[in-house]
Every structure is written in C-alpha cells, then in structure tokens.
Length: 187
Image (tube, rainbow, N blue to C red):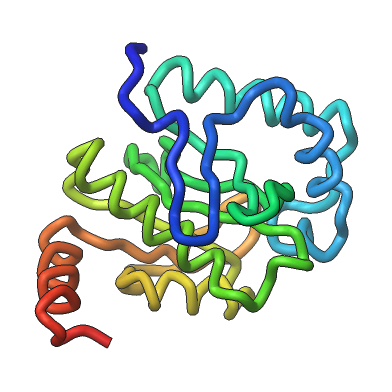
C-alpha cells in the first residue's frame, strides 16, 4: 500500500509511529504487565506477542494504517500502542479506535489524546463514515475515554467470550462536535 502520511504523527504529548519489528521488546514488556493486560486479554508470552506484532504489521501492509507504537514526545519513552484497525463485530466489518498504555502513563489524559487523534485520522484521512470502540463492561476508565472523545454507547457485545460495551461515533457527530469546539461552544 502506498505511503499515506500515517506512518508518523504526533499530538501535543505523543509520538505515533507505524509499528515495526524493532518494537517487539517494548510490546513484550507491555504484554507481560498484569495490570495492563487485565483488560486487554490477559498476559501474553513473548511468542504470543510476536504473533500479535506480526498481525499488526500485516494490517499496516494490507490497509496502510493500523496500531501505532506510542512514545512520549518529550522523552521518547515507550508509552503503549493504539490507533485504528479493521475488526469484525457481530458479523459486521468495522474500524475500531483502540488504545493501551503502560501504568506509568495512566491518569494523564494520554489515552484520550491518542483516541482523539485516531478519530481525526479515521474521519479525515480514511474518510470513514463511522468508527467503533469497545471495552470490557467493567473498564470504566476506557469507557470514560470513549465518552470524552464523543463515542456513544450502542450496545453490549461479547468479545473473546467476555462482556463488552460497544460505542460508535459517526463522522457527522464528530464534525458537529469539532465545529462547536472550534467556535468556543465545546467543553
């Protein structure tokens, strides 16, 4: 897939780069952290993480976008991963906004910052009509991120045999919210 300018982006506090094989050690560290993985499918071995990274890399090759490696802009420290990816939910093809951070980066609004940039890319660069995001029904922190970005609860779903909430944001909802924020009418 041709270059589309999505390989490296930044937000005020984050550097987002296309995942590469060299990101394996950082991803393994994240996947071995029980606090992080409590809401992301459980702790994974290095071999399982290698398979996951291979899927992330293949997604980029096929679609020209995917999960980014996320680093703290000021220091270059690995913070997590996230972005946009194709998923199937209830038999329907969707594009998901997702995010995951190491614990030392929690509580600083970075997941919201990443999700907002992912939404912007999804609607402007990828021209999606809508985007979804989902998390465990018990993960209130992730649900708050979705709400801050403008996602609305749609329905309960089951993923990986666990109860999740599915939220959706349409391009028209996002455009209206963005216009209101720019004119001073937003939060």
